[in-house]
Image (tube, rainbow, N blue to C red):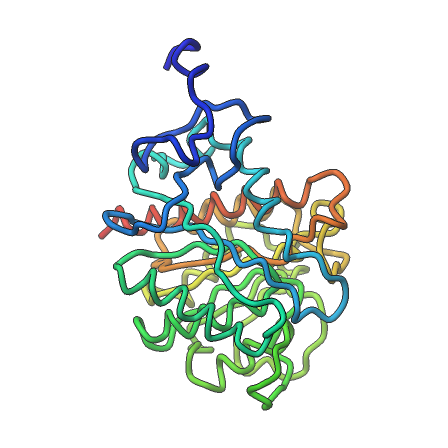
Length: 321
């Protein structure tokens, strides 16, 4: 596309005529949908919908992730010009991707939130569309997984995280971003034997049988070995990929609520995610980006890159079908 044509592109979140292709809008201007995709609630002909969940009322430390979806969308404007690096296809060219906007909920009725989110994702899935969610704190994965389990049965969970989030909690009314995967396993939503956690570096004596690659193993064995182990466990089972940004070391992603030292570098994460092409990823999320603690914007940028890689992993799987 020539410069003259590109200079006419503005507010493509609302004005673009189709759901495919890169965007050449000025990075510093315009409405900031994710990757400059079209904002729409029309799921007709859509392959995957990006949606935001600005919820952070389940955190144990620092709030602020309610602002995460907005920040990740803004950061993604840096990536809308080019095909994602290192892939042999451009997911933006080959698939109809939209920005579905945020889930609507009443912040003062926290107990109603889980069902609202499950219904939001269920609407997307019932239309034959996959979802990529921008959080929000990590609790949001639990209501989302409920909708996915309705469609796929007990699902494989590929979790990148500093924390296992499987601490015991048998009170189903509690809304906590550290216990929701305990509940997901206990309820039969997640199949622990076909799931795996990567980057863990906090203590939990009982991980409910979920295999773990802790951060030290990542550092010592390298991305290729990590990917081989992940793929050997997941096989071709339908997989939901959740990436808590605190999987990255605070040096790379300081803007998060519960940072833990010794995490993955952005380079390690990029290599692992790119080599995950071939897994049967049916949906995913990026969570725990907290802009109030992200003084340089680096965490939101990392979140946008992770989300784009998740789109590409999903797209690579679709191309094999």
